[in-house]
Length: 230
Image (cartoon, rainbow, N blue to C red; front, side, top):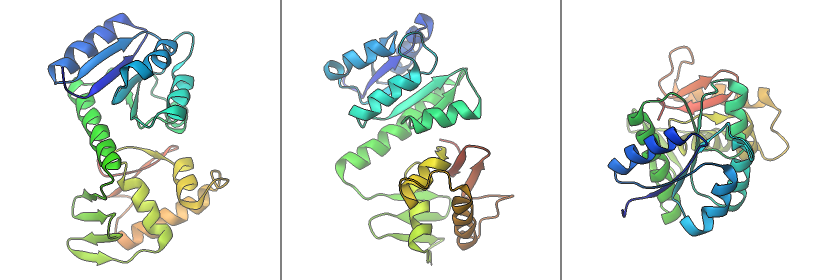
């Protein structure tokens, strides 16, 4: 199998078997392990392009596994979990996960999310400066230009950086702490009002009604995302 390499980390044998079978059908080369310890130990040998990581496992749990993987590798990490609580989603994203998928999930949805994560990684690795689109909104990272229906939108540096952070994760939740850290810098993670005002100003420039959003969607208690879910 010559497709992208995926490492599945889940302590349930049935899930490992199901994911391996389904993802192999879609052209991926899949290796499955049953613990966080095995995942860490096998990374150098396997060199996967993406990790699917269960959150609740005995031994080295999913959160700690995610932190250790993120500390050493830049590959995409998608968390799979039966837990649908906001604090757990926030914790996983802050630990370094790129996406969070709640079990049970549709296999087609998972394949779509994997595709988004791998395309983003490929763009970053190649040094490309892509143009991100959400409906008629376009964010050209190379030119630092934002347009709506070919009309240019003039943003402040803070507004642009907010939009850029959301655009590079289009369709995925970006936590409030991540936005504050990336846009305002370390030490600002608790300044929620600062973020809310920044998003308010950005929405105003984009003519985006928060009650009927076209571009920026609020994930209550967690953060924001640009566009529909990936």
